[in-house]
Length: 108
Length: 125
Image (cartoon, rainbow over all chains, first blue to last red):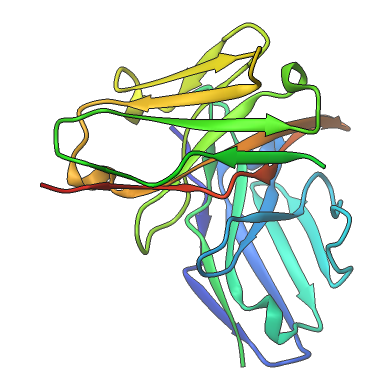
């Protein structure tokens, strides 16, 4: 089966920009979706498709992809963006779905 | 509004089984596959399986094949997940989530929205 690999943790100064990346072979045929999870809460989708945001998600969240890498960018990070972020895609080799390993974003 | 409401917390002994429910409302139940995801304490999200409520088609990650069964009841718009032969490693929050997908250019995107509130399953003797 495939894997989606993310950096375990990144930090960003308040108001600055941070990019979270996700790497895996499945991303060559799949646009990843991205989930924000705060402690004790269910995940919520923040980006899906090429760069689509569900209603209610601030436009400081954006997505992109190139080759086997998907990226989530937070432009002008706010304190409330501190959370764990996961990418998600189909695992074509196993006819299933997979999550990335997760990235903890800390806003300083 | 669209809602997924899951059953309450469970405490089970090792070797037992547990059956969790996820009741959907606010949309056409048959139109969206339903996924199950779990998260062990301090760990990441783990995809477990998916069911098409319309015809009962299921897919499971290989890790859970044979130990997990997903079923659906269209009359009550409820999806169930049974996990058998529980061990302490199955202690986790189990969540259901509605599937979406779309073709964009030559790629496909899948996303999960909304999610249920999660059910804590504790396996302990």
